[in-house]
Structure formats: C-alpha cells, structure tokens
Length: 508
Ligand SMILES: [Zn+2]
Image 1: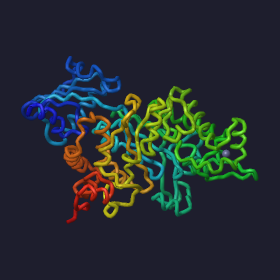
Image 2: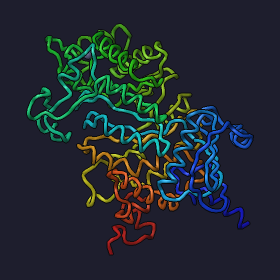
Image 3: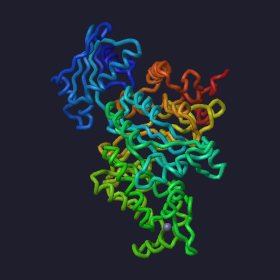
Image 4: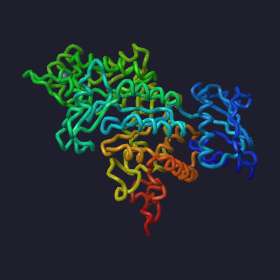
C-alpha cells in the first residue's frame, strides 16, 4: 500500500513542469556526463501503443543513470522534449536517477501575444519561445493586426504599415485619448513598429528549431480601424458618397475588402508554414453595414435580411480562400454563429460555451475562455498590481481549468491557450510579468494527465521554476508576494470568506 502511494506520488516529486506521465525512481542522483539517443524500446512502444499520432510523435522515455542519460523517442521532436526535461532538471539543480515515460495530452498548448496594442519585437518573442520550449509549450499565436496598429509588412498593401504601424501613445488608452492618431515612423512622437518579412522568417525558423508552431492572426471584419484608415476603399460607402474612414469594421459588401485580405493572407501563408491561419472574426460592430451602399447591394444579391449574415458571408468566403490553399482557418467563437464550414477551428473565448457548441457541431476547438486563461487579467489584488482588465485570474485559478467540459468529444479538443491582450501592457517587461508564472499552468494542463494535477504540489514546483526564470532574466510575477486570496484560487473576498477562510490579503 505504502509502495503504491509512493509510486502514485512519484511524478509530482520531480521538479518538472509539466509533470511527466510517469516516473519510476532509482537510487541516487546523476551527473549526466553523456546523453545517448536510441530507437524506441519495447517499453516505450508498450506505453504509447494506444496513443493518438500527435501524442506518440512527442513521446519519449528518458532513462537517467548515475553518469548518463538514455533518450528514446519516435521522432526528433520526442528527443527534443526529452532533452528539455533533462535540461529543466539540471537547471533546477538535481537530476534524480530513474525512468521517465512521457507524452502530451493535447496537441495545442499555446500562448497568444497581442502585438497590435503594444509592439514587442523579435528579441522579446525569441526570449519567450526559449521559455515555451523549456515548458513544452508548442503554439505561439501572434495577434498581428488590430485597430491600434498593423504589424506585418505587406508588399501588396504597403500603407498598412506605412500609415498605421506608428501612433501617438505607447499605452493603448493614451492613444485612444489622443484621438486614435497614427503618425509616420520618423515623427518625434512615434511609438510602434512592425515585422519585416525577413524578421518573421527568422522567427519561424527559430520557432521550428524549438518545435513551436507560430499561428499568425489577420483579424477581420471588426477591430479594423487601422485597415479602413490605411485603405479607405475597404470601408463602407454612404449614400452621399462619403467613406467611413477609420470605422471599426471593414466593408463586407465591397470587393476591395476581399482583394486586400486575400492578398495579405497569401503573403502570410508564404511566411508561416503551419497549416492553421487565424482570421479573427470577433466583436464586429456591424453598425455601418445597413447604411452602406455596397453592403446593401450584397445583401440584396444574397437574399439576406440581417446584417449579421454579412459577417457569415465574409468569414465563409475567406475560409474558402484559405482552404483552397490547403490551409485551415481558426476563428474566435463568434464565427460559429453566422455559419462556417466544419473544417474551421473554433477558438472559444467568451467563456466555454462557444467551444462546447462548436464541439457538439463537430468542429475542432481550441479552448481559451476568458473565465480562466485570459492572462491580461489581474493575477493578484488590484491594490498591489498594475492596472489590468477583468476578474482575479491567479495562477491557481488558471491551473484549475479543465479544457474538456463534461460531454465534449475530447478528440476534437485540440488543446488550450492563454491570451495576453495588451491594452494595459505597454512594455515587454510588463508582458513577461503577465506571462509567467501563469504560462506554467497552461503548460501543465496542456501536457500532463488531468489525474496528476494537484494545485499545492504544482505551486511548490512553480516557485522553484519562477526562481529559475528570474535567474535567467525573466521579469516574472513573484509568487512569494501572492495574497492568500490569489493563492486560494477564489476570485473574490466574498467567496473566500464564505468558504470560512481568514486573512485574504495575507497581511495580519
Ligand atoms: Zn459596407
């Protein structure tokens, strides 16, 4: 009995994040003078016989002996995951002898970074990818355009960056206060930037070396003030002949809109090899469409009675374009409401309901609900944290998230993703502070079996990992200063106190 309990607890006794599927300890620690790579043994084949292909591809067995480590895997990616486990143990200061058998639960373990509200640049993204690789996170979703700035150079539509990659106001809200003003790159007040194609290719290569896939997002039809400013012909046309330049939505009635997005997406597909292209689709206002000559014409042609149908028209047309190039679209959960082919992946953000509905309709889904994994939200008490959005979303709360809701078909759940929107995050240092350690929780939920997750043991490992990150120069939130409320996982003082707990702030 004691032996059984010890065996069950063993994976949690390694310092690794994410915790491995299985660890069978042996006596002593290793100096790891040498690492040997071998073909999969019968033991690994047996342990992974029932796994789906995506999981077997990353599976590994790591035998740690007093002086050497032996890695077995099916693919170079599996070898890489094993090396990262070893690297983590070495960096954490102790490499116990034994055998780790390990593979991921989900194929999509991601972070989204909002490049539009504040621009981060190549060095920052490389640094975060180093961290992601260490934690076996494998998806970096880049939100490359939004009203606050377009961040990817286009040959076909150069004004996108020439006219809207620099603005007045580093903090998004300052830009808003300044009247949403864009300026030229050499303006003394200019804040912003954009990625050249060469820089993006460099990032894609850097990601590939770390078995990370970058998903580019080209947002439409909402969140597009910068697009309608740079190219007024994609904005709605009123009866008096004026254009709604700087409007939130592009015009789904005008052919110019399709010309622009298809050209841009073609350029994006040349740079990013990952099969998935994100096309946004959230929060369209649709307030100009009923007033627009071109939108009305389109509605008449298509027999539409409601402007919402125009959103569906645009998304389906872009989806078909992307699919005709052998790629697959991902869109925020709104795209489900206006009709989209089953080949589209739905990313649930307005809680989990969009993901559940999409899953029931046979769509693959990525779960990134704002109820749990919006890491632009506060990670501790408002009084001690820099301004942020939303409810308390502490490490423990993020860690508590289970991506497969009861009744969902797990085979259609690609995985989970934390989203870092940057309205309140003007600098790279601040972005790092919001990413870590909450990114640790995403890594573990995405990789480790749900049955092995345990919040207190995880917190102990997260503390050590946080210290390692800080020693490597990452500006993490400090768990040691965390309030009792945040640590408890409750989100409000009321719920904390209702549970009979005392001293929520941690200050007696
Ligand atoms: Zn229009």
